[in-house]
Image 1 (cartoon, one colour):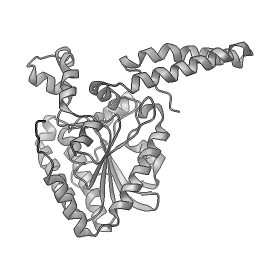
Image 2 (cartoon, one colour):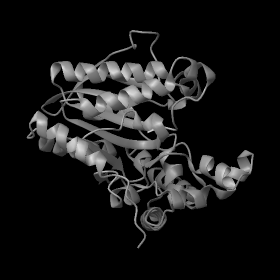
Image 3 (cartoon, helix red, strand yellow):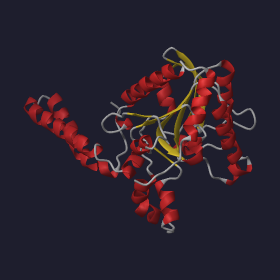
Image 4 (tube, rainbow, N blue to C red):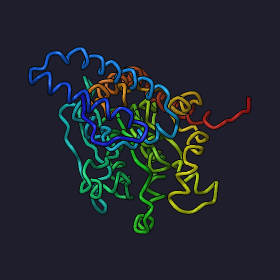
Length: 327
């Protein structure tokens, strides 16, 4: 189990029970064996309360889970799932963007190239990694790794977890839009199997730049959308200020259809990867094992296709996206 250090508002009912269970555990270890039955009862109550809460999450609550500071990030999945990882740095044009990480690794029997957004765990690291929001240099580093996968005929795995591309003036001056568009173009033409996994927040073009792949998988409590609920609310309800955006964020999240269940229903993603009870942040190792199994199954499937079949299927996949009918 992974101990969470942050609690969301809807998780608050669990806190008192967890504190009581820890107190009872300490007293039992201290010799008060008469409390064992009460300890077991409280653990059952906690388990049931968890099930009640996490089986009835709203879309906005899933967005909050997707942003949870204690969720595993790209390098956590690399550490738990892969071996022989060699991180590669820089875009060979300007600098190394810490918001994108990647390199060579081995997943099971597959030598692969892995690329992903990386958020920080501490305040210092979050600032250094720009809260997982890449600049053009990050997308060009990813592009260099895409080309490396193509050159050596290696499957490409992408982990998506970003609020979006960095919107600052300096990013626009260095060609943010072109960098994202170039990634989309080259991903569409790769002759190797490509798989993306949305592990947290998949925001706008910043996420899509790593997402135009043969298969898109998504963790159960991740989200994937053209805009954040808060951004959507501020536009639709035309109210400025953080509080105003938050007021309508839940309604926006409901209508954006950004959850894994909705996106699978509409054919945007190809599969949902289950999370442990309590979310990915509750158990990093179990989450990583679920992702590993899903990736290995997908790579086995894609490896059976010829290059022409792979490229043709990718083209057809994205051509059929988009039609909307009212029922």
